[in-house]
Image (cartoon, rainbow, N blue to C red; front, side):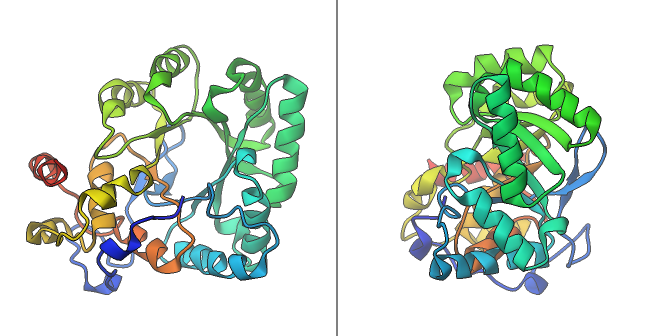
Length: 299
């Protein structure tokens, strides 16, 4: 989704101005996918709502710039779903027009019931995203997950998809997620986590690490609620200690500081927000004491 409190975040600064103690200034932080060891950029892009613009050329124009910015700064992950209206179509069209499609780590989902319905829906996603192979196919909100998991295992063996996973966005689903991960081999878990919603840190992150499951984080800004919490307030000076230049980066760096997190996928339709989000993947991350200090700011 797009940020609803853009007037309350600080302007992004050039990445060259940041301080780097353990990486090149032009290299975004990457983390390993446990199932393969492949490195994945830690900041990606969600397309819920923001890319659901159909054929509106005016609305598509800034989204092109968002994708260009993502790749220019080292990002690759773009997450979509059949649930997101025309987002898959728009992602496929724009990334192909920009000749960036092959450079993206495309993640989408199956969101239906029944084996044949699932196969048909996923085949449509391949066409919309203009891909012969999908990097990550996820079972959206655990919908008929046992049925689809069998299909995804077969498709992974056949090379149609590279990774498989499950997703959800509410804490009420955590018990089902725990049971699924404990008893089934999955490569990825996509789940909600933020400075305001930290239950996943206690219940799901340790299990994901134990089972070698990569973790993608959705809803990192809580639909703008975090920005409302800091409305009218200046970024703490000590945020510079971990190379943080804006409130958006403050919220994202808090998440990335947890070692279980592989990638965060905030959504936006604004190129300057995409650039600012990516800034969270550069420079230092807060240590545990700094994370506690950050929580004190939010209250």
